[in-house]
Image (cartoon, rainbow over the protein chains, first blue to last red):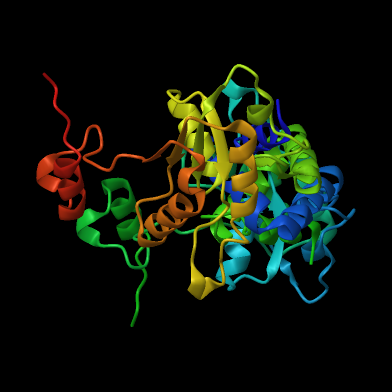
Length: 196
Length: 196
């Protein structure tokens, strides 16, 4: 296999990239972005070699303890449990949250062999002992497995944390009630708040 | 900038990849495809370092002379001139052509400073002297610049080649006459062929 064919087939490991777009990407790099391509190859090599889980929050980082856990300006009274590093990025980009995180890297799913051990629940309990947060926010996804995981964690944490909360489910901003599914509407009505 | 952020911003050099898909790609590699990511980084590094133009046809290759030019089974009577390495891949994947290629790596475009020198026209003339093909196929794109390039090459080649041809323009297979643009239809009618 030629060097170019190897690159084209390698690019297809990326999500959403098939043979045609892999070919387009390879030629783009080779014809127009040689230096950026070299930099990307290096960045990818370093990331694959060095990135591992943060010892405190299990988020992805190249250090022992990630930048978020090290940040002394964050609110140690809040600890937010999410399913994946992508959720950390989404919440950080939203910008409203200033507490700490704990990343499960999965959700309870007995059929797939994912139990409390894989999700680092013991590590989460240690982290709670360490931080003694006033509130634990369970921000797992609103799926069957996500809800089950949230309930399981709430039970395990018990009275270690005074306030255990679950993120709100409801009509998304910019969404239309007419086109919102029944489950979401039920949540939106049950979770209604007095405004005056 | 963390190693992960460097990877996410590096991935955005790929065509059609914005911040969100770059993030998805980076996390996919880090969480699920560590080994394939390492292999991709290596393939990309080797390709950026080694791939250059074939000495005979100007196609991309890591060797002095590319696999297509080396292939003794190809028909030396046919030489096809195309604009880019992507066109070679497209024609090879179509499968019907067994002659040689010459890649211009561009098209005449005086406003962008692309003249005959950049397109390797002298190299093309040398290649024609070498192969003495019975037919030269001009398969530049059916755009204003592509047509101008084809005409320019036809003039320069002059009587070195007995038969200089241009690829057919017409209704694409699976296309519908009703929705075909006027220019294409005019070409399709002018280029009609007797079938009985």
